[in-house]
Image (tube, rainbow, N blue to C red):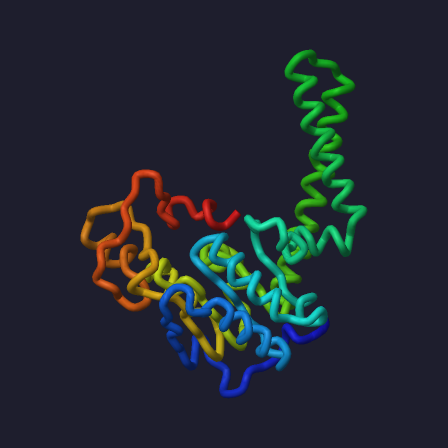
Length: 262
């Protein structure tokens, strides 16, 4: 990864963005490609970048653009926090990083998972003291490896020059929430409700950019019909007065943050 994750942006230290810029375009005009080029340019200049979005799909769309614009050196500094929905980006996830850097530990973790699943199934059919002891021995080792990987992931998120994640992950992951970035670029901003807008704005950062089309793309999803809920959860960064999308099949990000975080 190198040491670029600790670079200091120009200007005085601050607890929030010193400048915020909208990038409003209509669909199909190359907004995501332009943001990808912008991120690549920032990485070439040894700047650190956070790329949050409302959904995993939106994060992955921007990340594909960034990945296509970067050379091998800068690409090695990109980390996708959380779970990607695009198999072509698996190499950028923290899991992909650990699989490359520590394949033996990952292989051991996978074997333990298979063993525990097999033992649990066997014990559900027929109990023996030997199977029970093997299960008791395997579970702590799996917990230990998982905790070690979580600690390594936190260190990785603190040092990577470029991190892409959902806004739910940003809110819940302290290494991202408290880290200082040179730039934060929020894509598909029309879908981002005001609490998440404020969350992105509170990241210690020099420049903040919101990209999207507030008029023609999807607004935030809000199930509630209550005025207070729709005032905060049904409007995006442009404070659009359009009605938010309501759907009985849609999940509220605060009620089920795991839907976009994992």
